Structure formats: structure tokens, C-alpha cells
Amino acid sequence: MHRKALTALLGAAAISVLLIAPAGASAWAPAETATVHPGVQVFTEGAQCTANFVYQDASNTYLGQAAHCSGTGSSTDTDGCASGSLPVGTPVDVTGADRPGTLVYNSWLTMQSKGETDADTCAYNDLALIKIDPADVGKVNPSVPEMVNMVCFHVIGHDVAVAMCGEAGQLELNVMTPYVAYALLESLDVMTRAAKTFDKKCVRGITADRERCRWYAENTVGLATLYNEELGFMRAAELADRAIRSGRSVKELIEEEVRKGGRKIKAKGT
Image 1: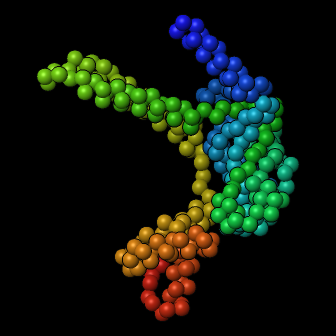
Image 2: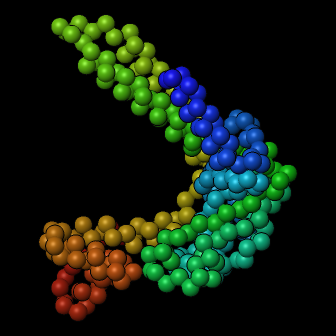
Image 3: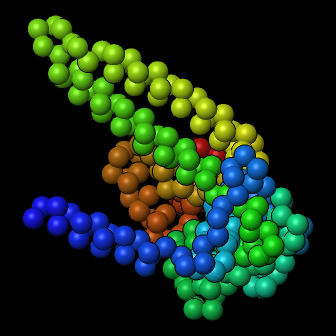
């Protein structure tokens, strides 16, 4: 009875996997030879950005990038509901691909078409998809960051096993030490190799968008915590709440408070 139930369960699981998996999914290129992967550089009419993930549906393969990479205004434009953007269909040059990809989705354009006005959504919904030319799909591999995830999960499993081995020691004797040594050494080995691969195949290809990073740093409400000592916890919390509700930065609100009340408070964190 148990065997029949297990067989039925496995069969149902297999059917669900077939239904969920993309019917037209292509085989990925081997990680060591793939030329298109997370971390490659993409160029939208000269604007350079870093592709940060690979996505595949039933028939196509896409690279993900920030929506502002196809913006037509300043590099510091952050309001996706008001900033200009190149249209869907714009060619995008992809490092490692022989043919240009095509911009097929841009969250800025979508928000504008739907009349979005929420300040947080307009500022942080920053996603675009580049469709890879079918001739270049065989060069794609998304697995470098995912590989690191799997290695980490494997090591976490070893950590749990080592902890259980420690709990199984009795009378200061532990016959589990051979496995403990094996788990520790293998964890060190696979983590070392994963880190080297991640560095070579992904991290070294990433370049920071300095202006965008500065904007995020200057507009995080976390800066309010720097004023705990001067304003007190409750007023600092109110400052953070005002920043969230108004869509303005903590720095702007502090400067406004200084102008109105004449209180000397130095802007911090920028």
C-alpha cells in the first residue's frame, strides 16, 4: 500500500514538472564555454550596463538589466514614471553574442502606459528584458550565481550534519569524527572552487553604475538612524516615515528642518 502511494506521488510529481517546465527550453551552454551569462556587458545605443540574470520562457531566452539602462535623459534620472526611455524593439548589443538582442520589456514604459504614480514604485521598479537572438541562445548559461547558491546549500547541509554529529557524542567520545573531518574538508574545497569560478565568470564582468549607486545611498531611509543621537529615536523614526510618505530623501528633510527652525544639524551619510 505504501509502495503504491509512493509510486502515485512520484508520478504526479513528474507530471507537474512536465507541465511547469518550458516546452521549448533549450539546453544551456557549458559554464566553462558560455559567452553570455549574468555579468556580461550590454550596450543600449551606447549606454553600458551589466546583465544581472538570465530568464527563459517557453520559446525565448532573455537577459535582465535595469530599465534605466535604456533611459534617454540623465544618468541620475530615477523616476521611471516620468523619465524618457527608448522604445521596446530597440537593438541591444550583448557582449559574447554575435547578433544584437532586442529590448522587449521595460518597466518604466509599462508604468507610464498604466499611469502609475506611487513614488516608491516609480523609483524602484527598474527592470528590463533583452531577448537574445535565437542564433545566440546556444552561447547562454545562467548557472554561475545559481551554482554558488547550490554549493552554499550543500555546505549548509554539511553544517547541519556536523552539528548532529556533535550532538551524538556520548561520554566525551564521538565516533562521528571521521564524517566531521570529511564534511569540513569537502565544504572548504567546494566553497573555494565556487568562489574562484564566481569571481572569474561573473564578478569580474560587473561594473558599478556610480551615479545610480550614489542615488540609492543618498535616498535610503536608513540614513535616519544616523540622527538618533541628535534627534532621539522617536523623532528619527518620524523622519524616516516622512521620507517614505513624501518620496523625498532624509537629507532633503533635514536641510528643510534646518532652514525652518535654524537648528544646526549636519547632514550625514553622504
